[in-house]
Length: 633
Image (cartoon, rainbow, N blue to C red; front, side):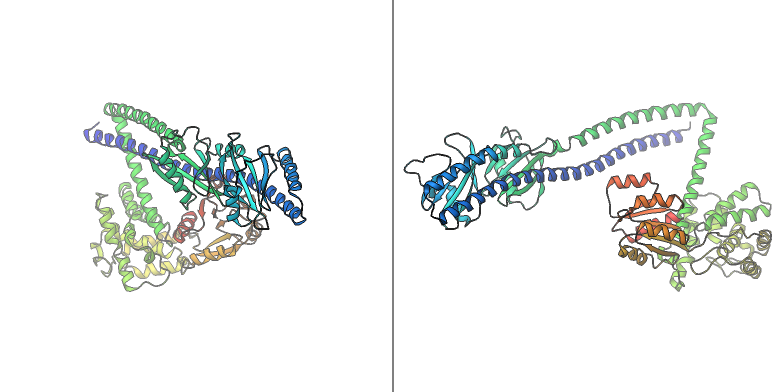
């Protein structure tokens, strides 16, 4: 193989390898982004579940406290003795332990200035309840139940918490003690798929309990951990990121009983370990693929150098690719003009037939065919609003239209060596009498290829649908070409075109499809149907038909032909997918889903059902227009 080809093979190898690694990076970013959203949802859900467990556990105990307090108030109102109250508290304490919670240790309190303990505990003579936190915090709560910060029981060594409440007399206090085992177990279970640790903080931002078995487990000293937890209590966000010792963490938080704060603290390196593993795996796979590509292309170079046949096949493949690129370029230009889709292909075919009838060689016919295909490539420079304007163009807008042959020439001059292709594009709007543009050439000074394309182009313009009219009748077109002989058209070429028209008795040389398209919009929200109508109001080729349910849509299809359906997914009675199944039983037209559902499962399901595209609400007006145009064309 020649050195220049070796060079391109090397470049191709490098570009392919680069593309592989770009793809790996892109897939990693998409996967990580999705994973971050899933992890955020999972962490929030996990913490919410733990909060619900803690709230449920504490609310039940608060209700026990309220019930007992109401009974004691009743007894006090009826002048029951301290002994009666003590007997009641003892009975209730035993019952609660057996029937409700074995972590419950007893009811006690101060009633009419007398300390009474239902658990049987007898305080020392100097014991002053009014100095205890359960008493002080209950007084400050003014009759509302209050969670008292946990403490270590002097007798058992167990961590205890108190629930206290001031009675209606404004001086008596009732309280109950509960061992923290259940709460500790709930906090210990807080995690994201087994990762992270939970913390429970009181209103003074002190740690009540945590899931850490070792305070240095996260390589954070006690002071730093305290600051992190303090900031978490102060932070208004339900989840956020924080960096400690060059390690990133995610913090989730919520409140318990509007008093305490529950926190979930997780290392990002643990959360996204799977993503890192996938990245390493993909890099390894890409490296192997890259090695295989290098081996493959090295063998290909050697074999190509040894075989002229393979070189010839390579050239043919390049030529085929060029043809595909040309066609893609033509489709791009035609797609920009909403009203002339397919125009370039028809002009190319008519031009080639004229050339054949002029006894041109096959090579010349092919050249003229490509010149016809690319004659309007310069329209890519014309603004979308101008080229698709439904009404009359202003002088300035028409000047923009007139410049496209020059643009076409400069686009093609570096692509095609053949002057016929370039001149055909540049001069196809010249007139035989010299009044055309861009150079005002006259008669045979206009290149022959341009004169051929000029006749074919004018014919197709008259034989195609426009926003303001349908294709003209053959007789009208014949009259116009006859009138244009010697003025607009080369007389000999015009005569050939007239002969082609005479032979086309069925009038097949025209744009057969109607420019008017009916679009059925199916959405249970009439406002969405109205929104589509407003977006497309400047495109008169589209007629909007509305239906507010799948059943009504099927009824509409039975009444009139529809070119395309915009279909909502989430509708009552019959959803979008059931509607698609019912429609496909009888009809075959493009269907585009138009929904606010962004779940990947729905998108994948749409693909299974064979929908043409998927548009999420709220959508961009230009995106809607482009999807409709591309789907219908």
